[in-house]
Amino acid sequence: MTRLGSSRRSLLRGAALWAGAAAAGLGSVRYALGKTLFLNDPFQLGVASGDATADGFILWTRIAPDLFNPEALPPEALAVAWEVAADEGMKNIVAKGRAWARPDMAHSVHVDVRGLEPRRPYFYRFHCDGAVSRVGRALTLPMPRKPLDRMRFVFTSCAHMEQGYFSAYRDMIAQEPEFILHLGDYIYESAWSRPVRRHPGPVPVTLEEYRLHHAAYKLDPDLQAAHAYCSWFFTWDDHEVANDYSKNESQATADPASFTRRKLAAYKAYYEHMPLRPSAAFEESGMKMYQRVLFGDLAQFDITDGRQYRDPLPCQPPDWRAGRLLDITECADYANSTRSMLGKTQEAWLRDGFAKSGARWNLLAQALMFSDFDQIPGPQRGFYTDGWGGYPAARRRLLDVVKERKVGNVITLAGDIHSFFVADVKDDSFDLKSATLMSEFVGSSVTSQGFDSALFKALLPENPHIKFCDDTRRGYGVCDVTKELWRTDLRATESVKVPQATFSTLKSFAVENGRPGPQAA
Image (cartoon, rainbow, N blue to C red; front, side):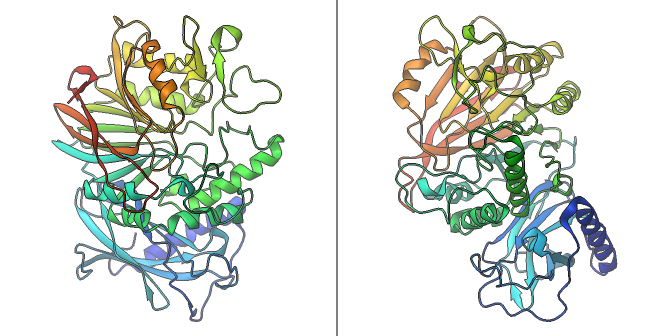
């Protein structure tokens, strides 16, 4: 960050960051010295902030006057000025500086602003060669472990631009959240069903194709407005890369080396288009997405990455490399105690964080539903292998930490399944007398279609720990948290096929302090 009057520090810090990028294989870059003439708005992809802390946040933009013309910008880095103000009119500037928008990073800009006051709004904008961006708003967090009485945020996932309009993002703003938690499938690489609008090209494989996909999503006015309204936190799921991929395996690309190249291209494009902290910066080995966020003494958020480190799916047929419904009696490897969903390092980090947490509420934020969901009617048990259902030993290890260390008020939020779910996470999912260890809320989707509402409804008697399920509506969740109560409102719409869809609260549930398990509110 550059405090007012100390720009030299910012430039030196920026030079160090870019030197590290060059060392990671991004190469050297020429810097533009003359004025660049823009035929279109260079800030047409909007602005965003993310990964907030008590004293700052990450600011993002991308200089992109023409997405389809690679010669619209010179092959040099462009100087981009940024400023942060205490007021929306940008009169009381409290921080400012300059960053370089480099061509090898798609002319994106990431600014790590620090030194601000805790838990208050700030406003920001960018300048480049006479062009000025819209003004964005960002909120700093409360001081870690300091007394905090309440917070309000939304969680969301699964936004397929071909399958609907992003009206959900507009409704999120109306709920006045302090931040937005995105749980994966921010973009979709593939297309199916009748579209209401089109992706900009074929299924992406190369870096340029993933960049174009991200840019097309960023052009959506409702998404831009939600990014400009408040800071976001992120994890990813599969469709930012390819359906149901696991580490270096993919349904779409049989050769692991080829898929690894595709995955790293997708990761780089993802970083270029998100306001992510410096520790997540793209490297040739991948990106570090998991993180722990503290909201005073009220809540600890453990945001996880369920894709990058997982072991292969269990008992896969030789010609199938994606999730499938598995009868567990037909798979000897299903209960293998060594298999991990999160990888050993992340799993140890999560267990340690849960065991040492002193927060009132402990949130496990992830892409995939944690609750068991038996999808074979009758006495047999069958689970979809791409989620936690394919990693029962890893799931058991985490439940044992909660149980043995007596971790209180554990809430898990998820997306992925394009359906609302509310569930008791029990010590034994299929024994209603067993202890409830966590409470789970699963959001539906911004636009992505549901799977089979009749089937889901028919399966509920097989899954008595699931208290609510609805995959007929698209939507997201709003969470109001106090010391004594966690409340989640499920916001939903009847249709995402019209641009001005309206939302209402479909159902509300609450979890009382010291009493695990959601209750109808």
